[in-house]
Every structure is written in C-alpha cells, then in structure tokens.
Image 1 (cartoon, rainbow, N blue to C red):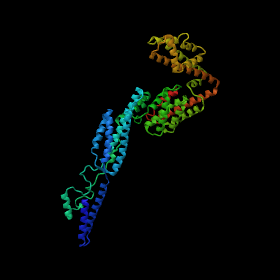
Image 2: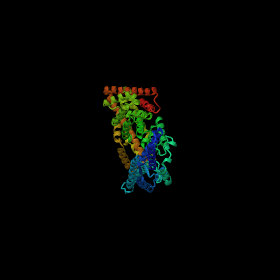
Image 3: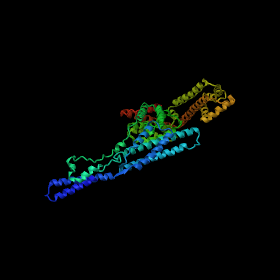
Image 4: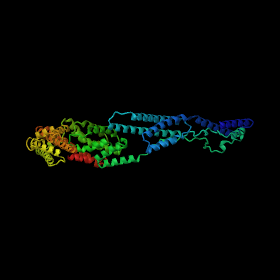
Amino acid sequence: MNAWACDLEAISNLASSAKAGEPDSDLVDELRSLISSLESHVSYYRQFRGQRPTAEFTARMQEALHEVRRVLVELELLADDLALLVERVFDAAALIPIKAPLENVLEAERLLETAQLAAQHVRETHAQYQAPSTLPPKQYLLHAQSLLETIEHSARLAFERCEDVVALLRSGGVVGQDHSDRPGEVKNGSIESNALANPSEFPDAATFLHEDDNPFEIPSPEIAEAFEEPAIDPFVADIRSKASDLFAHQEWGLGYHFARACEKIMPAADIAFSADELKIIALGREMIGSKYEPEGFKDSLEACAIIASEIAASEMSRDKARQVALYAAVIPTALFNVSESTNAFVIIDLLQTNSSCSAFFRIREVLEENRKSNFPLTFQSIAAAGDAKADRSYLEERRQRILEKIKAFQSSNFRFALGQKVKKELFSSQGELNILMMAMQTARASAGAARFAAEFGDRARIMQSLERLAEIVGHGQVIDGAARERLVAFLSDLASMCQDFTDATRQADEFQATAGRKVLVRRVIDGLVAGIDHFTAHCRRTKTIRLSAAPINMLETFCQA
C-alpha cells in the first residue's frame, strides 16, 4: 500500500503547484503517468486478494497419502516405479506454497477429490483382503491376487492425482511467509519513511522503466504443462507392432495365444487385436464344413459382434484389416453352422456398410439366399449336388477313410497292459470296432455307421463304455490317464466320421429323389465361387494394404474346399 500512498501524495502535490501556473502539456503527461501507476496498483492488489491459503488443503492431501503408503508398505507393494512415484510426490508436497491463485485451488480441489476416492478404495479393498475367507484355496489365491492388483492400481491413481495437485498449486503461488506480491510494499522501514518524507524525490516510473516492463508482474501458471499427455509407452508400442506382424503374416493361432498372454498383464485397449477375434479368424478356416464347435467358440463369436460394432466405422488401416479378416472368418459359420449363424450375420451386417468390406456384397447375397432356403448347406450336400458318379465317389472315399482309421488303430500299441486289453476287447468278435469294420464292408454301411455314431456320440457315453470294458478285462482296475484320453480321442473322431458318412449317404439319396434341392445347392455354390473371385480380384486390383490382403488366402482355401 506504500506505493499507492506515494502516488496519491505526488498527485496532490502536483495539483497544488499547478494551481498557481498556466496550463502545461508536460504537467498533463505527468498526471497521466501517475494515474496509470495507480491503475496498475489496483490491478495487482486485486490479484493478491485472489490468493487462497493452502495449509488445510495440504493437510488433507498428506493424510490421504500417508494412509495409502501405509497400506502399500504393509502389503509389500511399494517397489519399482511405484516406490519412485511415492517418493517424488512426498518430496514435492513439502514445497507447496502457503497461498495459491483461487482458480488453481478450485481445480486442485477437484483433483484431490479423485485422489481421496482412490485412497478410500484402497482402504476398502485392504479391508476385504484382511477379512477371513470361506473360498477354497485355489479360488482364494486368485481372489487375493485380484485384490492386490486393485490396491496397487488405486494407489497409483491417488499418487498421480496428488502429483497433479502439487504441480497446480506451485504454479503462481506465494512461496513463503516473508514473500510479498503486493506492488510497492517494502519491508525495510527506513526506505519507507524516506519515501514518504520526500515524495517529490521519488522518481517517476516512466523515467527508468520501459513501458512494456512491469516489476510486479506474476507469471501466469503453466497449467497445461502439468497435464500433458504422456508419451506412448515403448513396451505398448512394441506389443502392437508384434501383434500387427503376426496378423499380417496370417499367424492367427500364434496371434491368439500372444493376445491372450498380453491381456493378462495389460488393458485390452493397449493391444492391437483382441484374442476373441483372432480365435474366430483362426477357426474360420479350420471349421469349414464342420458342424462341431470348439470350446469357447460361441462366447468368442458373441464378443466379436461387439468388436465389429466398435470398429465398423473406423478408417484406420489396422481396423480396416480387422474388418476384412473378421468378415471373411465368419462366412463359413454363416453358411454351415445354423445354430450360430445369427451372430455371424450380426457381424456381417455391421461390417457390410464399410468401404473395406463392400466387395463382399456378392457373397452376402449368397449367404442371405442360403439362409432363406431353410435347407442347411453341408459339405455332404455339396458333394451330392454333383452327378451320380461323383456322389458315389465321395461316399466311397468317406467309407475308405473310416476303414483306414480303424486298421491304423488296430496296429497301434499301448504302453500299459490294461490299455492294450481294452483295445483287444474292442476288436473281439463282439467288439464295437470289429462290428463297425464288418458293417462298413457291406451294403448296410450307413446303418452300421449311424449306430456307432449314436453309441459314441459324446464323451460321457465313451467314458461309460470304457469303464464297462475295463471292468470286464481289468477286474476293477482303472485305465491310466494317457491311455484313456487316447481312446476317447480316437472313438470321438471315429464317431464324427461315421456321422458324416451317414449324413452324406442320406443326402445323396434325398438328392436323387428331389432335383430341386440339387439345383438350389448348385446355384449357391456357383454364386459363392463367383463372390469369392470378385472379392479377391477387387483386393488385388485396388492394391489393398498388406494387412487387409491377409485373409485372401483363407477365402481361396475356402473356395477350393
């Protein structure tokens, strides 16, 4: 306030001396200079009055930080980068100014609320971790690990927000008790008394300061720097690069396992591709013509419907590649798998409107025609749609494959005696494999195959049959695990082959009696081949990017099949 009083005194003295003289332009300029100085004092006085103390604010933040650090130390989670973050925040918190601009304090209050909520979450999760559990040991370990990860994540969030608070308060704050931002206020009493005693000797600011200089200017807080977006993590960038390389080289299965491993240690958003979509793409080629669904196929297909909705409108090159690959992968499901064709058509409808998938329109028309026909398309019906000679050739090929598989198993050996005895019993005169082998060499091959497929159609029935045989030949002994799984796998595959043979025989007979179905299937096949040729030609003609061209081989394999 001393400078304010000095300027007012100078104006008063100048006005008194000017009364006795004539009007003078220099006098007017001097008055303007003094009035301008008064205006600057008013501005900076208001700015100083806008400062708010930070003591109570700092105390609340310190309390939350100490509580979170105590939990981390108790659980031995204070290590590596988290320990460095905690140390950095506590060191910076000691330098918070005693006052800070009002707008900074209000913004810091909002950030502190987030930090306090995170600290509260740490306390609540810690209480759950300490509470006695009734879960089985294995489930308890998984649950405890999940709680520890939650505590670490919430603690990190609390300290990061507090670090932002400190940076905000230190921007433009008052840094000490003896520091003053009030214009003209000087602590030295002798200088102050001299200035007041002789106002006329107080030099005019305009005589030694440039008009753009301001000795009382407080630099504006650089808030934006405190909230800069962090640089991309090199580890995340490397993960995305490797996932893209696997995708481009059509390593669908390896990419699926890579994505699954990554999803266990990092958010799904940081991975270039989802494990569910890579699983569906990998199975797209393997499931052509099969009616059997691998474990988890339905769940992955439902997840892919959500993924398709997220990337349908994207114009990023990687997402365009995902659109094409996912579309191509669900074509076999939409064509052959009636039970899951709904989800497949959901994905197709979502992606059809995108420019990268527009060349699929002919295939889309064929799929829609096949769905409306109410006649499930199978590989057996495709084979039966040929001439009569081709029908019988296909059936003979299937029959020979069944006989070759049985003979190959008959010549194999088991490590332990009980497995060998069970195999021998299967090939006895009344054994199931001997009965099937004899039936496949007669005109009643279809009936024999159907009976075997019904008897060994699922794992439960196979296990019951093996237990019954083990009781007969082993007198109550149990088949060793390796032999049991080997027998189950063989009988399951053989039952699947028998079912395919039965379906092919039945459909060949139906086609001979119903010419209309044969024409329909032939039209679907011709349309499908034309659609695939159109899409592959479009990709090559437009020089589709490397990632988008990856599914072309899948479609060509499908066309050849």
